[in-house]
Image (cartoon, rainbow, N blue to C red; front, top):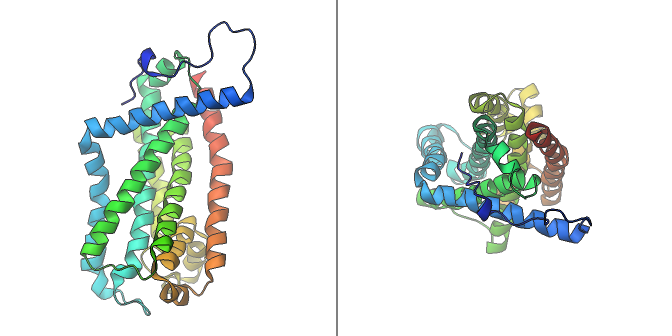
Length: 289
């Protein structure tokens, strides 16, 4: 595990032996400060071990090249000039979903190696470990999205809308990545070791990614699978990204309004965070006891 648990690196937290419990604003300030410290440490791990970041970005690059050049000529999407226009928003979702697995695996490693116990000895908020981990992984997801954009442009993808729509699409993808990081955190904390966490994560990530609108329209799937794809949270973020990046052609392909697409992805993000943030925090506290 990468976290440096040196006592000098954490924020001071509440002074030991203080009789009066600090107020909510003060506790919130400590928790945010602790979370940022943990976030910074996780980011520094990628700076010191850049191969970890390289490995996590190779996979989505391979998906862009393989799907575009191997399968692209066999997949025709009416309404777009080339398969890459339909593909790239799906690659964004695939990249952040697969990247979220690392959150759970890293936390499972923490438990295995006793890092959680060492963190408990520090005067810091217990929730800071989870918040810092998920925030750092969200920032990494943002970097991967920008990298995928460069690769997509090189192979022919062109944005059909304005800069603000494109930035809004990136923001929605990154927020969705943060929600998936919390799902993965809960999976990692409930698993018996890092290997189990990784194996378990792919059980839920693969069906969500490939049984969605990421690579082919749900209309091309069997009826039962198309129904699953339409309610799939991955489809919700992919469809919203397509509308924001391609404009009217995507609206015609998806046959849904931008307002409905936005409402759908918003509901999924809120539901995932409302369910898995409390579950992950509760599981972390029990694991640390």
